[in-house]
Length: 143
Image (cartoon, rainbow, N blue to C red; front, side, top):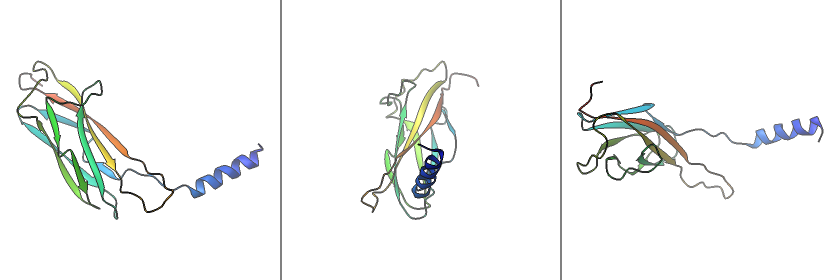
């Protein structure tokens, strides 16, 4: 293929591609959960002006396994309207705590942004997942 054909195909492809951008924004880049506080909150904002999105949240350990016995992100799933902000609470699950008490633990807080169904028949949609570091600090250590 000649250079002209390559350049022409790149120009044509770039002219028909739509823009993609992350619509759900978070108010921080990492989360610190102090056991003494009993919980913390994160704000999720829908930056789109026309569409509502679903936000699914969960917490994982370092191996990528969902936590089922320590901390929980509430609500698990919520609808966020255009230009709307919602708060997500991270708290203990039913008063249980199986995390180490002699050191900090590194966990991950995940938010999956689920877009609305498109009106176009042949459209490709992507979900965007944000993954933030979540540091758990127990009461028994000095920091």
